[in-house]
Image 1 (cartoon, helix red, strand yellow):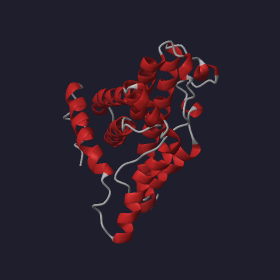
Image 2 (cartoon, helix red, strand yellow):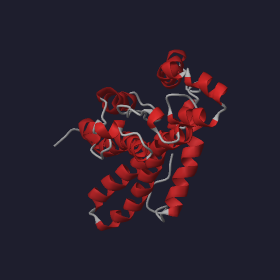
Image 3 (tube, rainbow, N blue to C red):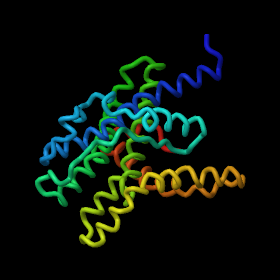
Image 4 (tube, rainbow, N blue to C red):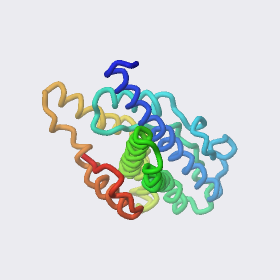
Length: 239
C-alpha cells in the first residue's frame, strides 16, 4: 500500500498527465494543420501535422515547467510545446492567414474543453473510483485548455494573440509590435514568475495579478461550456 503522501502525489500526477499531454501538443498541431491548409507545408514536411503528442513535446515546456509550477503550488499551470515552424510568406494571403494560423491553437483548446465536457456524461457508467478519477481528469482538462486558450490570446508576440494583433494592425504598427517577439518569451516568463517570487520574498499573496486576470474569463467559459454540453450537474464548480 502507498503512504498517504505518495498516494496523493500519484493521484495528482495521474489526473494531470492526460490533460497536459493533449492540450499543449495538440495546440501546436492545430497551428501546423491550419498553415498546411492555407498554403505552407513547412510543418507538414517536418512531421508536425500529427495528433501524436510525442512529435510536439518540449521536455522543459511540456513536462518540467508544468510539474515545477504544480509542485510550487502555483494557482494555475502553464506550459508550451515545440513551436510549429510556419513560413508566413508562403501562405496564400499572408496577413489574413497569419491570423487564422495563430487562432487555430486557442481554437483547438476550446474544442478540447468542449470534448472533455461531453465525455463527462460517461462518468455515471463507471465504478465510483474510476468515475472520480475520470471527472477530475476531465475537469482539469477543461481548466487547462481554457487557461491555454486565454493566456495565448494575450496580445504579445510570440503568443498567438500577439500574432493575431500583428495581422490586424496597420503595417507600421504591426512591424513595431512584431519586433517584440525576440523578447516576448522573456517578458512572458517575467510576468509569470516575477510577481510570484516577489510576493514570496515579501510574504504577500496579492502581487500576482495574472491569475486574477485569467480567472474571470476562464470561469465564464467553464460555466458556458458546462451549460452548452449539459454537464453542469456533473462537473465540479471552479474554486
